Image (cartoon, rainbow, N blue to C red):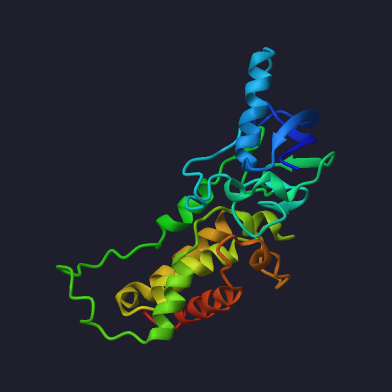
Length: 250
C-alpha cells in the first residue's frame, strides 16, 4: 500500500505558560514513502489552507545529522525505529493507526510551543568543557601521535552523539548522563584531550546537575533509543572521569 489514512493526536501548546492539550487531526492519502516530518509538512499545509495555526516542530538538516527533529512518537523517543525522527518513514505505520506525537518531556527541556522544546541546557553543558582550549600549534601529521585502534574507534563512537536529547526524553529520571558521558569520553580517550581532562569532567558534570537533569539509575532506555547507538558504558566512563577529577589537577 503506497498511501494510508491515519489519525494524528498531537500536543498543542501556545506558549511555555499555556497548559497545552492533545488535538486530533485525521489525515488521508499519506504516502508511505514520505518521512515523518514530510507528513507533518503535509498536515501544516492543510491547516494553513483552512486558516488554522500550523503545528510548530523543530527540524534542520533532515538527514539524521543535527538532532533537531526529536519527537516522542507513540511513547518512544524518535519513534518505533532506531533512527532520528526525520529519517523515520510512514511505511512503519499501519493504515487507520492513531499516532500520538509529543515533545520531549523533561524539566530541563521546557516546551516553547507545540512540539518545540528549549534544549539550550545541552549547550551550557558543552560550554563548560566540550572542547579543547589548550594551544596545540599547527595541525600535526595524522600519524604523529600513535593511538590504539580500539581507543580511536571508541572515541569516534562517542563523538557520534548529535545531542538530540532522546536519551533525556526516554529516561524515567530525565538524566543527561549518556549525552554528557559521550561528550566527556570523546576527549578522555584521546591524548589531545588529556591536558584539560580533570577540569572538563568536573565542570561538565556540575553543569549537568545544575541544569536539573536527574541521576542515572541504569535503566538503559537512553541506550535503547539513541539514534547513534551510543552505549551506556559512556556513563560509566563519565563517572570514573569525575571521580578522577577529585584527586588530580588535570
